[in-house]
Length: 346
Image (cartoon, rainbow, N blue to C red; front, side, top):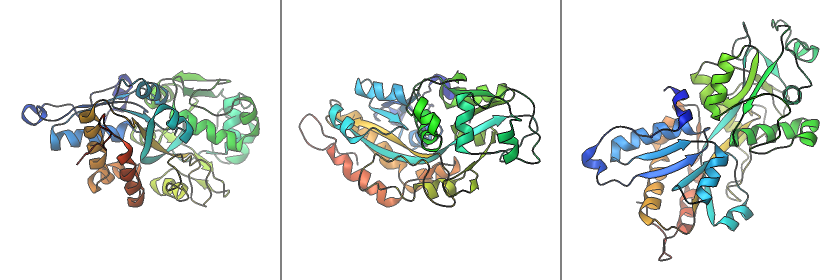
């Protein structure tokens, strides 16, 4: 998959199926770039199986939230979960689809994936502009034997409102007190330094082109673009690499039965990846377009099946546990049509 093409948005499940497609309901969605690779893969397979097209624009979580609130799409997508009171205010429900990890990536000549170690404190100091060179003593002390250049660090961050940025800045706020005090967390923050790229795609492309740069992207982008990810020190004090198992370890303590508002950064566990997060779908409780809403739920129900889990695994996302999927399906009963009845999706 050429992930750089996602930046302009795309027609998921492109391809013609005139006979079946004529009877299938198309669905529109917009939002997070974090899950765009798996939504693309799901939608392509779904189109081949049913003829239905899922038209998803990878425009960032901030834009996805705005579009679903404005009712210009059938579903919005965000990596930054909305709190329960905000959902209630706007008449929305949210549910998770998959779990993944946000990964710092670097472009330093001679530095291989997993060779460089960083802590959250150092990462925050880099993005604060306090650590400006790769051979800063604080970095070299942590990385004996790694040839780090006497070169300026070029930080890259998101230019758009982003759930990936929410996870990244939420993590930095937990591990770097100065970051928390001066910048804080959010889908969009007042970045002290760095060049902006649009979407995970834009940050990936920027880091690949810019020598001595550092950025943060969802793991699928790092892996498929063969980018040099860093090892991070987790809450247990271990330096860990991003992986499915590390994301699962971080998500193990999520209390989904309590609320779908779950932030999974800096979780306990010796194997936990510290910047882990779920990605979420947003829909209105009161639907004006019953058929489109039912078609959207039917798509996500299909994606929750074993085949969808396998596709998620292939792209290094973590599928939701069966018990969490059951909680989601139960919540779908809250999505109702103009007649006040739950929208069926089977």
